[in-house]
Each structure stands twice: as C-alpha cells, then as structure tokens.
Image (tube, rainbow, N blue to C red):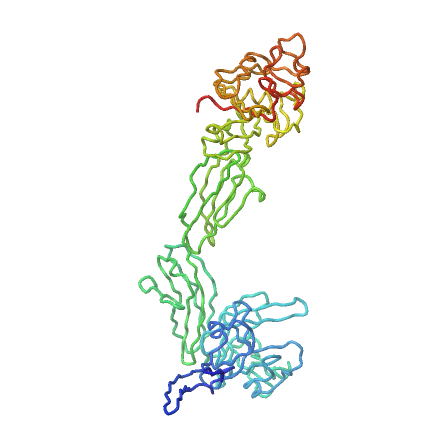
Length: 592
C-alpha cells in the first residue's frame, strides 16, 4: 500500500477477486469495487502473442486443468516454443519408469522431461515440433515436423508427426504411430523390451509393423507453393492413413476458403482463379473414431509487379549536372526495386541507391547509357528502361539557358573535339559569360612562351589564361567580349565589344573586335586585326619585340595601349597606361 495505491507483484490465480477501495471521512465512507481476473496462458505461443518476448519460465494451463510451469523459447525460429525435453550434461538420469515419464521429472530451468500427460494436453490443438541436437560429428542440427501429436494415456501416449524439414536427418518418421515405452511398460513391436535394451524411454518400434485402430496420420508437404494470380491451383495431396477410414476436410487459418472457387477431390483442394487474398495457410483435417489430426500447408499467390511510377524513356542533361531516377511498383509479394546499367556495371563511388531511387551526382559523358529498373517479386520480375544522355555544352551561355544559374567551374566542348573546364560567370550582365583571362594578385606569372599561351596555364578557379586554341574554338560563332579592369586610379571599369573573334593558329590567333561600349576607355580597337605575339614568336608591327619589352604576350601593334598579360607590377600590367590591380576577360555568343 502506497498512499492511494495498491500494488500486487507476480500475480497468480489466487489474486483474482473483487477489490474494494473505501474513502472514510469523520462520519461517512463510500466504496468502489474493481474485479481482477488473472489468466493463465494455454502455451508459450499465447504468451508471445501477448507481448512476453523474453525466454524463461512461465505458467501455462493448456487443458483448463492443473496449471504447470514450462520453459518458453521466445527467440528461436519465430519464438513461442514450449520446451518439453532438454539435456546437456547428463546430471539428470532419464532411465525411469512409466509414472515418472507420465508426470515429468527434472527442473524446467535445467535438464528435464515435462511429462507425457502435459505434452498430450499441449498437442490437443494442431501443433508442430522442432528437435534440436548437438552432435559430436556435425555440431548443431535441427529437424522440424509440420504436425506433432501425442495421444492420451489410454492410447499409451502414441506419437504422430507430419512432414519433415531441417538439416538433421529425419529419425522420427520411423517411430510414427508408435506408443510410448518405458522399462516397466513395454509397448514396442520388438520381441524384447527396447526401453531396457537402450536404457531409456521412447516411442520404440521394431521393423515395419503397422498399427491398426489408430487415429489418422497425415502426410502433407508444408510448402509454400507459389502460384501466379489468375491461375487454377491444386494444393498438395493430403495423404491420410489410419483405421477406421478418416473423413478429410480443408479449412484456412484465420480466414475462409473461397467456396465459389474451391473444390475438393480425392483429398486435394483446388482453388480456381487465384488472387493475392488466397495466399495463406491451409489446414487438412482427418477424423475417425480414434481421434482427429491436423496438418498445414501454405500457398503464396504472386501478383505480377506493375509499375506505379516509371522514369521517362529519355533524359538529356549536361555534364556536371545531377540526376535522380525514380521507379516504383506494386505487386504480391511486394516487389523489390533494383537498378542496373545495360552492358555495364554501376560503380558504387559514382552512384547512390536510396530506396527506389538511383542518384548520380556531377554527371560526365561516361554516365551516358541505358539504365534498367527491375521490380522483382518471388519468381517474377518486370523491367523498364530509361536512356540517359549526358551532353557537354558548347559554352557557359548554353548552361545558363539550361537553367544552371550558379557561377563556377563547368566542362564545355565548343568544337566537338576535346572537352575542357571553364569558369562561368552566371551573374554579371545577364550571365552566361565564359571567362578566359583572370588576374588579381600576381601569383601566376604571365610572361610565357607561345605554346603556353596556345594551350593555357593557371587554374580556372584562380588566376589563369584559358588558351588561344580554346578561345579560337569558342569564337567560331559570332561572339561578344567583356573586359573588366580594376585600376589604381579609377577603380572598377569595363569595356564591352559587340563582336569578338580570335582566328586559328595558322593565322597566329589574330584578334578582331567590334563596337565598344562601357565606362573604360577603348584600348582594344587599336589592336584590331593584330596577331598574337609572345617572347618567342614576334608578330607585332614594331621594329623590336614588344612581348619582350613589355614582359607579356598580347596582340601588339606598335607596341600597346593595353597589356593585360604583362608582368604584375612594375608598370607592365596596364590599360590606357593605367596600372592595374586585377582584370577579367570573358566572352559569350552574340546571339542567344
């Protein structure tokens, strides 16, 4: 008793009853009642279903007679197993008489035999048996029987087992239909007393004698059998032996057999036009004057998977983009979704599988191909395909038009030759600019030779020159140019040219620019029509070498009004002869 609470620990049937709560004041009291009913489970399966998930000792009452303790295995093979035999060290002797085997001996927490009478009570409903052995030669093994019955004492606790499965050899079917024998009650078919010979007690048999006047014995494969929706299906034959001849019937566990689609002929149940609702466990029952036996088999009806969502037949994306391919399906059993690639593996480091989705980040041309979504049920699978085409854009303007609006590094291929990385400015002046020149701190030297300026140098994420050959490829279509400078005297300025072309190497990457606008002085028109010059390739109009004298590389005339590739500092890096702290040159097509 704690305040207004009454606590009762470890309930037993004795605690059932009516409990009265009284509230007493000075001269008056009132009462209220509650009825407590303490139930005893039939077996360990009922306890498991009620939420008792720990293996251990429980009290059961399978026949509404005397309750008794059992050991419940709640973890093996789905749990809910009532253990009736256990041996592990030989401490408990098992060479005992009839009454001891009838009532049981040992301790359910150690070695024991539960008792034939209790085993009979537990198997008065359809039951299954699991035998677990630890052999000296093969280690742990098990045998499982789809049906298990032990009759009452009047029939000497006769054993009946059903269909066998497991990885131990079947060594109980031989004893099927045999009565229990002990040293003082010999019920075997041998001329001697097998219990005495083998110093034990068992359902001993000899040779192949059969026993008449027995309750039915059923042989029925446990299944499952598989069928496709819409098929007519015959369940396995329910083979029955026993005398008198048994009456055989079929039922369905937790459901009804569809009477309008079910027929029974020769102990075989046939269900026509099956659908997924017909999946389940079916029970064959055989009854005669000696008793009733049950055995079970199961059927799974496969509904061919149907796609509830499919990817489009074709997806076209750009190099560097990401894609998520979605696919889902319904069926019975519920199908699993997998993704594969036609004729090629899907490398784990480039792809992510999340549920029914296939994600590919930072696409490259290598990811182009046909991808297959498979919906797989038990024995059937269906497929759908999507063709992924990874394109490489011509320039940053094409990326911008495709919806990629973030400035950064992208891969382009303007001339259908070798792809290369560029930095795209997606914010300035309408976006879509391909940057081909950038300087800001002088860390990268720009006083270089012809081949370096042809191929490019630096890093597009920092200071760099993209390369004359790439600039030529980019300007093979009508283009415009934007020059941005950071001057020491006037801050940030820009000049924009309505036309911009760089010819090929055969004509020394000659420059052509159009009309200029902006707030920086026009200092490129004076270089119009000039070839590119470097320290080792002099193409200027001056009697000397402007590239050497200006410590750079440019379309020198005689010599320069601008020198954006001159050495940083020292007056060589200028526009309109103003020294610079930074500059960018960028281009994009003249027409969208």
